[in-house]
Amino acid sequence: MALTHNKIANAKPTSRDYKLFDSKGLFLIVSPAGGKSWRFKYRFGERERLLTLGKFPDLGLVAAREARTKAAELLAQGKNPAIEKKKVKMQRRAASEATFRKLGNEWLADMKPTWSLSNYTRVKNRLDRDLFPQFGSIPVGDIESEAILRALRRIEARGSIETAKRVRGYVHSIFKRAKGERLVELPILMEIDEIKSALKPARRGRRQPALTEVADIIEFQRCVDRSTSNLLTKLASRLLGLTLVRVGVLRAAPWSEFQGIDWDDPDTPPDQPIWRIPASRMKLVVEDKENPAFGHDVPLCHQAVEVLRIIRMITGSLPILFPSAKGWRQPMSDAALSTMYKRMAGGRYQGQMVPHGWRSSFSTIMNERAADLERDGDRMVIDMILAHVPEGVSASEWSYNRSRYRRPRTSLHQVWADMISEGLVSPHELLSRETSLKGDTAA
Image (cartoon, rainbow, N blue to C red):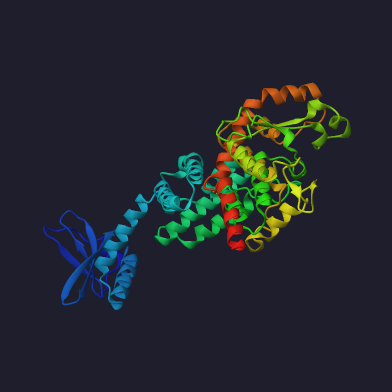
């Protein structure tokens, strides 16, 4: 006769264990101490076996019967319920040990060989700073999307809008890994996707299309190096990214504006190399163009000097660095760089990056770096590098600030150059390739 709840509840202990049978292999053992435990008797292979389901009253009669039914279903599939129970227990233990920090570090280790060292360090620092302190010790399966959004809101609060979007992408990748290991279910991934629409939009304003990830910028430059454009156009692109001047300023740059470089002795270290651009060539109101104090000085990083030395070998006998293909008295066409960007790599960068976008790339990446590292002073330096003259500033103020921030500008220029130049071929190598290609063509 099948058991009832009252019969189970009223069962009294005796001096030894005894059984109360229900049906289809399910029974209850009552111990001398009064404990009541559900068991399921079944046959697997050639042996009779027992499966412990749970204790009464934690596991009631209805729940015990459901557990028996599930065990029977496993038997029908040719699976041993006891073994499957152990697997579930092991999975739960693994899930409890699979914290977000553990999964995040495993993901980082897997990605490290595919990234540059600087990109790996940058991503690791963001996890260490913005995610691990929030929920690094929590099992990944216990983390809810609300906690993730809160962490991203903290990033937004310090002005790092683009960083928040990137960090959300890192979280999604880590949870995809967890899904592959059966530590989380699909809904949490869908919720992390939906967080995108909850984040603040990037402050585009009137900015030109620009790449805002260092890794993307490095790959972009590799595409420039591999393009079919002429060497001088490729070098112009490299120099534009390193100096961050406006395109028109670069195209018409005369050799006379570059100082501190011994062109005749490439082995002599430059003495504070600098590009002095007169106010007349800067983007200023008419009256300021006539004031020498509004000129712009560009500290030259060592990568820029290397590029200039190669350009010097090509056009050093001419007044300007980048003469037009139609005549040496005119500067390079204003469409030369933009056309290369549009056509190279099968049109991959059309609408993604334009020559003027270098300035937006620098501003976005370095301002976010300043926010991440809590370097508030960098913001003024970034504006000085971009020659953003505040409205109403006097000539004396601008001249003073230009001198005052010379060293920080030089330092930040070099930081930027090191970031975007990692792994690129040298200008000398570009020249060697061009020379070799021409030699093969002539042969």
